[in-house]
Amino acid sequence: MDTIRTSRTTIPALGFGTWQLEGQVAYDGVRTALDVGYRHIDTAQIYRNEEEVGRAIADSDLDRDAVFVTTKIWRDAATPKDVERTAQESLERLGLDHVDLLLIHWPADEIAPLEATVEALDRLRERELTRAIGVSNYPAARFARALEVAPVATNQVEHHPYLAVDAISEVAAANDAFVTAYSPIAQGKVLDDATIAGIAEAHGVSPVQVTVRWHLQRGVSAIPRSSKPERIAANGDVFGFELSDDEVAAITELGRGERLIDPPFMSDWDAA
Image 1 (cartoon, rainbow, N blue to C red):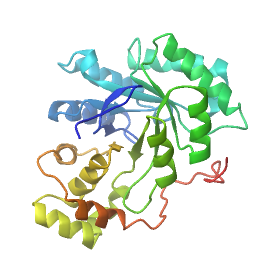
Image 2 (image 1 turned 60 degrees about the vertical axis):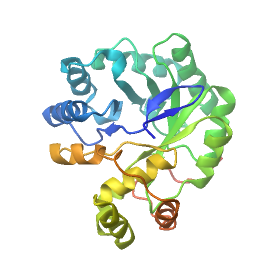
Image 3 (image 1 turned 90 degrees about the vertical axis):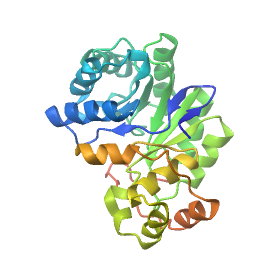
């Protein structure tokens, strides 16, 4: 699956993540990603690299409309006034007049009601400062609430073979939305997995490539991240083979509820 198409947006299914990439490393990573064929770049205010991401896109030979750009508003700015203010600041750092997808990064109910935050995001969509809106790290019930407020396109969450997101996926499927997976290779843990290694050997590819392909074949957008040019290229080279249904199922069965990202402010992943 090269793209994911819904009524809310069309997005390249494979993206380049920039979490923990800063300064020249972020710039070089995005330039490499664009050079080897990525057309979806994911950043966030809290990553502190929007300026470098924007420069890398501007310095490429690609037209603006050829690159799908996602950024995220940090949870501290969840009030309607701060949503608009910080979105404008992100656009200035990126050097863009709009992004393709704007997310609220984490639930922040203690700062502003979920509904107010999502309504503020949607007003930015109506003003064409973003083409689509979404949420990130929203449990299924909160995701469903957000979808009642506005045409939310995606929920970007930690998702990999060891952490299923079935409830979130069901909400997405019922509402013409999709899941975006960050940490899609479980921060490298898939490299040591015997099941994934066996499938990779059968296809003559790497465990990382198998895992990224597993996401895409299930209709999930995946945003792997690396600072090494050779790995950036390899992570994106996933369209020359296809997993069988049995192979997809074998990887899916590896789920064991292993969460790698669990900040203290997200105390209850099942909260409504």
